[in-house]
Length: 149
Image 1 (cartoon, rainbow, N blue to C red):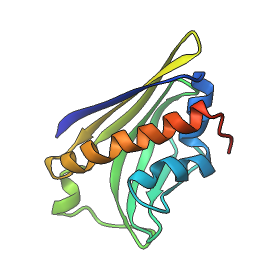
Image 2: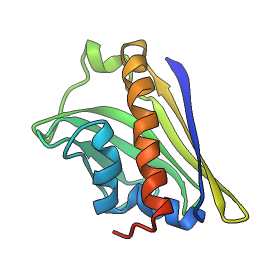
Image 3: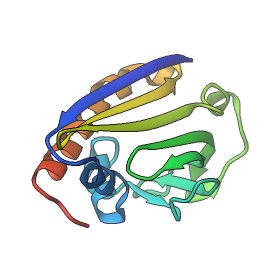
Image 4: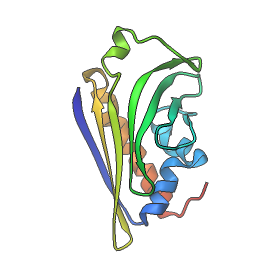
């Protein structure tokens, strides 16, 4: 797997950016870049499972390995979902099972630098290179416009 890094500067406090990232309603807005109807099912607590799921019930399940509110969250991706159900690991998913994805927020004078780092298998590099900047642009727009979930 390769390491991918995406970053943006947002003219809003990190607490506002954090809310845009992980509020149930706002999450569904910025993640449309990946899949219309995306949502995350979780309690957002460290050690908890997260189901990142699309409108058709596909997606992946992960665990929150570390969380510092308004500053850092790390996910480890564990497997695939189909029709909302966990699937056995197969040759396709084996290429990304165990991948990590982190979000780091650093605030200076009311401006937040958001950095996303993730392990990406070769099969998904082009996809994330195209979609992640779109998603972060939406996070920026929502946070700078004071979106509240």
